[in-house]
Image 1 (tube, rainbow, N blue to C red):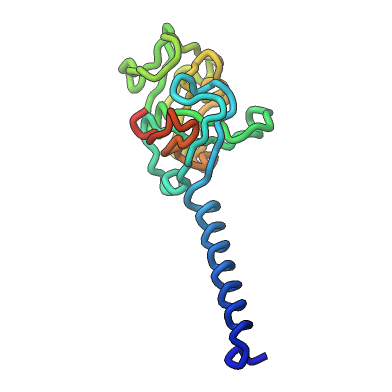
Image 2 (tube, rainbow, N blue to C red):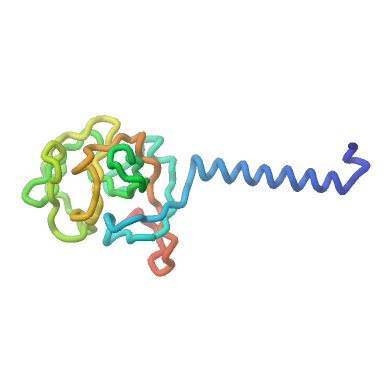
Length: 184
């Protein structure tokens, strides 16, 4: 059919093209740039709460641009034996850092880590092999803010950067707690 002679067909093809383009752009964004994640559990309280909705950007982990304090999503279903994934944790140490959990405190490179964000005032080393170590290249050490209720690097060890699917940047639900997460 000749679209020049059939303006209705031309209009339909134009709409189909634009819809397909929008879907393709949307898929690219969701798969490579940003995604929505829902907090499942209490391991990040008091910073994040069960059922909080987050926007997670996916570029920083791929570029290796994670820093102390970043809140990240971790895909380690095979290590924790749970079907809920991703886990949401805070980066406490990066490659080359020395981490030690001693007398209920976290020491980062020999200095006590100031952690205003944790629930409670003590941190327990769940597995002695992960209580004192130097984080290897290509890994980070993550912990939940609710240290008494968190599956994190104290149990599973340092996490490979490839297993970090994103960095939480914004909480959009519930509305009364909405806002950026880079200062939390």
